[in-house]
Length: 193
Length: 272
Image (tube, rainbow over all chains, first blue to last red; front, side, top):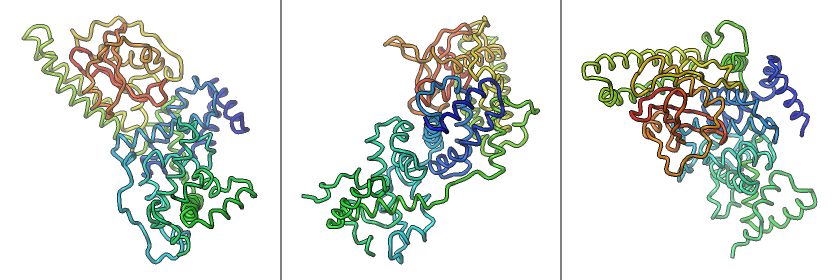
């Protein structure tokens, strides 16, 4: 267990004894990352704040049943991701829609793929356009920097599935961001401009 | 035959992420360089990864942070401060309680004729209907009030003591009259309490059900929960019979729940 995990465990014990400071410490430790995950999942800031709030309320209400089989943060993010799925479904967002065909956010003047990414502010939109399963994997692994194993535990799917979702999610993201052609074609032109 | 098939996507992804050891990375990169398709795939992986890593991490503003902590603490009744949630809740919050209230109203309106048929005596029907409407109005007012504070909506109809939600189950001792014969505030309160108990200790919801158990009121639950696949249980509790439909976030707890009188599908209580 990590140092953060040990600290969380101690804070949970204090919280369950009624120590409000422990609550504040747990919030302080995790609120930004939970919010970041929610915002990248939902895109809308208000919706992300709702989901963040709902996540923490859910977790603190059930924390006495937290068995400690995994890190507290893993459980927290799992609740956050599920809350986002649920909220997206209820609010009619495109959480589970496939990428629209022919989506083209390209800047045709871009000469080089990475430069193109820097020029366009469309990352969040491209991310939001990913199917929810790919998006959550990409957000957790690539944006939040979590390990494949941790993402696997959060998402409740095998590590191999996470790998596949990350790979395919990045590919779709690149196609959108860089105006790359679909993977059935050769993509090398983009690389060389 | 595609040359791409020679390369394991996982290795390309790992190479892009920089998680291969240097020797393996160099060897793979040299191989890939000779294959335009694989090289393009690697470029795509790197492009996306680089974009994600360069993007600034979203952070809460100071106000949002303060508001979030205050709202969560208030929902958990952690602070002694006087009604902190009622003052500065986020504007975004009210949609859920209001949506539930609106859906509940629709369900209740739909249930009124049925209830009238089940009421005692023909002349009693108008009175019952009036009581129902008054009760409905009161409950919707509860929801609307709770909507304003941002987090009270997480309690059951604004009446739930959240202390019970922190793990301490308080078994019901109420012996209410059957819901099918009366429709009173007491019955609603009993239903609220039953729901609160179930949420605090959902073991009954997850207990094995008879194979042929068909839980009524599914259509109403789908509307209220805004979900196509809620889980249903029909329970006979001390407070009376309930048709329960709920959503779970982790397969062990309750995320959202609605309770109905089984015979009429009258909406009785909800969580949050």
